[in-house]
Amino acid sequence: MAVLQKWQNTTRIPYDSLIGTFFVVECVIVGPIILGNLLIIISLLRFHRLRKRIYILIGNLAVSDLLIGLVFIPYDLVFLSNLELARQKYFCLIRHSLSDMLLGASVMNLFAISFERYMAVVHPLKHTVICSWQAISIIVVASWLLSILLASLPILGWNQWEDNIPCDIELIWTKAYKSIMFIYFASSLIVNFFMYVKVVRTAWRQFKTCDKPTRGPSDRTRITNRSYRKTKIMILLLGAFAICWGPYLLLVIFDALFLEDSNTVATVRKFLSVMGLVNSGLNWIIFGLKNKDFRKAFAYLLRCGIGVSEDSLAVSSSNTPV
Image (cartoon, rainbow, N blue to C red; front, side, top):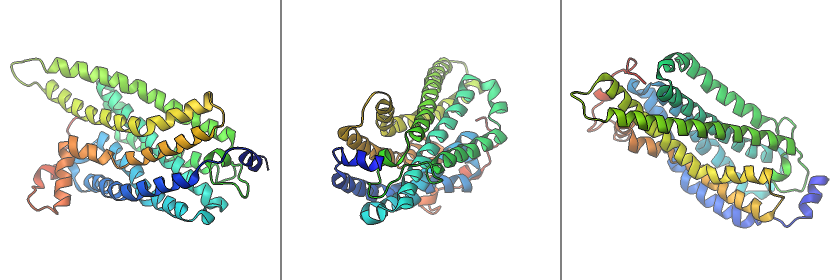
C-alpha cells in the first residue's frame, strides 16, 4: 500500500495532456523510423561493399531503432488509446521494460561505435586485432544480452506494482532497480563522452596534417581521409543522440542525485522522453546524407534499380581498410 499512498498524497501528473502529445508524435514518426532503418538493414544484407566493421555496428543500431518502430511504438499506441488495459500489471511492466531494453541497446550500440572509432583513430595499429570480426560479433551479442537482462528484471518480479496506481515508471520501479539503471546509463554516457572527445581531437589533428599540400596523395592520406569520413558519421550520430536523449538522461541523473519527487520534474521528464523516440528516425537520414555508399544503396533500393548502377555497390570491399 505504500506506493498507492504515496501516489494519493501527491499532486497527480497531468496524464491527459501527455497522452495526446505522445500519440500524435508517435503516429508521425513511426513510418519514417520503419522505412529508414529497413533501408539500412537491407542495404547491409544486399551490398557486399557495406559489410565493414563500422557499418555492421551501425546496422546493429538500426535494428534497435527498427524495433522501436515495429514493436514499441505500436505497443505504446495501444497503451495510450486504452487506459483500462494499461492498468493491467504485465501490460504495464512490458511497456516500460521494452522502453528500457531498446534505450539500453541504443546506448550500448553507440558505445560500440565509439569504441570502434576510438581504436581506429587513436590506436590504428591495434584496431585490426582488437576490433576483429569475432570481437565485433561478441560486442553485438553482448549489447543485446545485457539490455534484455536488465530490462527483464522488473517483469521477473523486481517491481513494486500495486493495484489502482497509474502505470508510471516512478511508481512501479523499485528504488534499487532505478539506481542500477542510473549507474548503467550514466557510466556508459560518461565513458562514451571521453572517447568522443578523444576521437574528435585526434581525427581533426590527423586530417589537418594530411590536408597539407603534398606532391601526391599517399596511401596514408587516403586511409586517413576515409577514416575521417567514417569518424564524422560517428560524431553526427552521437550529436543527434545527445540532442534527442541528452536532456532526458541528464534530468534523470540530476533527479536521482539532487531533486525530490516533484510533479513538475516528472512532467518535464515525460515530455523529454518523446524526443528520444525521434532519434530513431534521424540516424538513417544521417547515413543517407553523409555517406556515399549508403546514398547509392538507398537510391538503388528506392528506385528498384532504375537509373542506378549496382556495380559500384556490388564489389566486395573486404580488403578495404576500415
